[in-house]
Image 1: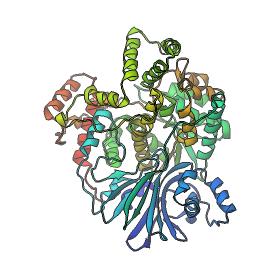
Image 2: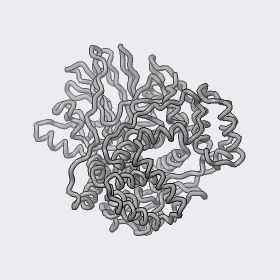
Image 3: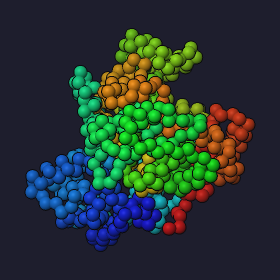
Image 4: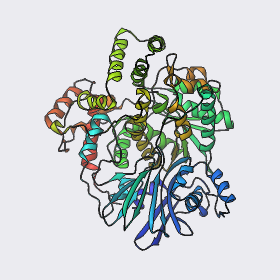
Length: 587
């Protein structure tokens, strides 16, 4: 199992047998305290830990524990977790700011205490029966366990194909494999079995709105400072968009680093370098690395990623991220900052607007609705057809629940190749009465972010890189999540508070850029008709897929119809994974 995850930590390997029938293992990627003192599994007194991630505020917690009389023998954040558990017990996780998945064997209570960070940045997968528990960062390690079964979770496969969700709730593509949900702890003992409970729920808090912009700036800079703690070189992914630019510019504003490396992928069909260059010019000490993938590189990346993910490659943009991580690895980087997580609570996605306008209508703020409709018409250049489309979707978002909206998309937006089996198998119950805030909560926990973090972890760790996401510091998320809708969308711009708070450190062409691109690729159309066309020639082996519908849609796609290109990619990718990647690999 450890060998299957060697790529996650090639610097060191360790095992521990702290009690009969209890084994812990670890592959170490040395980031903080590079000495052998940071070896894992680590034991102190009655406790033994294996830990993946970073506790960014470990120095502050360490000072607090020192004041209580605790002694430290290392400079690592791992020891801080252990002694935090010794002092505060299971509630220690409430003190942490960071990303983590860890397991602590408590020999006094003869139990295993496990935890996953608030937003699920780091993975925790497990298999259990009445006699035993296996857990690991990646499913490929669990495939080697004696209780693994490769029976497919049909519900998750359908969500992947119809909606592009690689994970949902505690489910994976395998029936037998579960994931610990974000913000949850797991306690296991042989006598009592598994107990899983939530320690954190994102909720609206009270903030003085007059101070919101300054608070955002303060919290964001605080998060950047914490995320820059490392004993190795740090670089950044960089698309030229607002989020990655905010991260890179904040690093330079706070630290004025010399030779800070950024990594950018571009294509002829999607070239963001014209925007990225504005930041490179503003901060000339940046060392920019760029890459244009092509030809056999794309084929190789798809095949490797399909095995790496333990799930289908549900979108070609994840291969762009794969290329970025590979490039950073080639340049010797072990830690990368990334702009992931901003869109989900700062409302960067275009379909956030439907919920924003619905929020204004339900609050009786028709003046705000009409004013912002006109503002977006100007900033986005909307014509009559686009405005009509937006009005229809706004009305749907006003009167229909998220459950109904996503169910309609799930069943009717793309072809149904699952027939009568395609039944709604997700719960989008309301977390807040405000449509925009409720939408944001589900973006974070139910729909988009969990899939993005899943791929971020697999892509980065494939090249032994730790990806850090400063936008997902929980203090920052809680602030913006709690603010009124017009702090997030205003004057014809999404992410308004971010733009206002950081306008002085970013080039204006970036700050007030109205379009959104991200890690876009020509994959679903160009690659699938060229380098990856062989995927469409593979026999369809997924038994739940209707062969007639698949052949019909595939034929239309090959004739030049692009309307369902994303769906075609997902089905073809799922079929490749199902055929070649779902069973245990030889280690």
